[in-house]
Length: 512
Image (cartoon, rainbow, N blue to C red; front, side, top):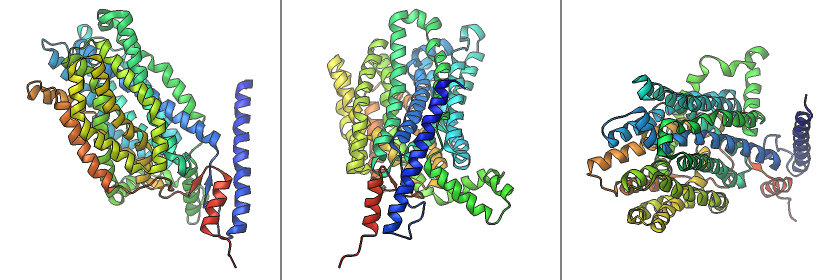
């Protein structure tokens, strides 16, 4: 084995040994204060391991959304390459319809990968979704144009978009669950914000690469062959993301759940039967049945929150470059440059939003974001319509600051809606149903509505306001979960001192 691998393995073993000594010391102190305290009552996290887990989830998420974002920023070019017609609007609509196709299978991907992640573990499923997304994106870069193979070109494009959509169905629910279950209760918002930092980084990388290629190659070369390069980059990036994810252990919450289920199973089954009981052919149906029969109120709330959040998200991060180019007749590079600057600003502040929702609560930050879109959408689009670079940037930032309140909070708020044993499955199903119905269709719906209303340039603002109003109502029905344990999991703390303080508060020493 190479020396570097040996050192990495030794470092990992040292980290695990430190965590074991840390927990043993805590249990010794805690039991002196409360003899009835069980081993599973409190989880003490190790900050190095948590940061490594967050990095792997966030970097993998960035890779996935880099792959997914490329299509958005090349929508106009892809429309001409794969859907040539006499009408630019028809070509663009066909391109966005193919963009939306990937979202049709996301609920299927969520229904498959989510319960699977609740049965065999978060890590294995996240690694597999990483492979699928990289393969699907890389393959798009190899498809011949419509001029070369005719109708088979859009057919193959749709096929590989379906592969992308199916894999993405297991990504967000798994990655947010992974981080939420690793993070201590008082820092779940902060660590969760790195997941959406990864999303912004992926979109920023995609937009930056497309902008660079547009600038260097020009529109002619981009239409001929340059558009393929961002898709082909997905192959090596996917290998990096897969490597990072495979290095991690399962989340502490899932390990505890698996241990408790194994212990329960061995009471009535043989050791061999118990080992494979969670993989029985009826297990997926049982999980799905439990999700829809027992978790439906939380599912409805999740769908409403995600619908409002995704409409505003995809409008700003996916549709706006096309709006600036196709509707306001900006140069394609200028539209991407404005969006790129907006996303960089959001990346600079998103972790502060994570800290704020840990301190003040998830609901205040989510309500701020929803009300921001409801109140500021019309002023923002009026500024964007003005056409001057300064006003366009101000309008984009107004919407961006509203969006970052949602981005920096959702990754901690959504996993807390569901208990540990069905968290991955429930969140994947709810998130992807909503994204399929509302998020991925946003560019298509806005483009179609603008055509129906004779090119009314304020249609995107009205659509965002309607989504925000639904979001406001959903936030009102939420329970506050900041600084609280996840349902079905023990309290999780960052330090030994915090654990002792928690036990002392629950069982204070008697006073005479």
